[in-house]
Image (cartoon, rainbow, N blue to C red; front, side, top):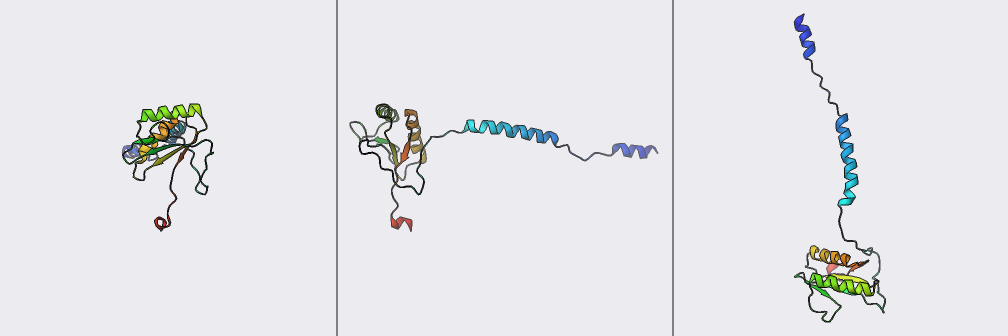
Length: 148
C-alpha cells in the first residue's frame, strides 16, 4: 500500500499557467504603443498625388530651385553664381535668408537620376532646419518610349 500512495504523490501536473505571460505581453504592447510614435523621425514633405496636375508657381514669386548632381554636390538658383556648387552650410544659410525675406517662397528639389536617395534626404533635412514649410520634388514626364 505504501507504493500506491507513493505513485499518487509523484504524479505531475502537466498544465502551464499562461496568465502571467499574457500580462507581460499586454504590458509590452502598451509600452511599444506609447514609445513607437516618439521614435519615428522624418522630413515633412508635401508630395502631390499621382492624379494631380503640375503646380504653377506665382509669376511674381519664382521658386527656389535646389539641385543635387551625381557626385552629391548642391546647386541653388539664388546668389551670385547659380551654376557653382555650394556647401551644406551655405545652402542652409541662403535658404534661411530667402525664407526670412519671403516666407511663402516655393522650394523645389531636383536630383539626378543616378543620385542616391540619401543625398536628397539630406537636402530635405537642411531645408527643414531652415524652416521651409513646403518642399516639392522636380520630376520629368516619362516619354512614350520609356513607358513601354
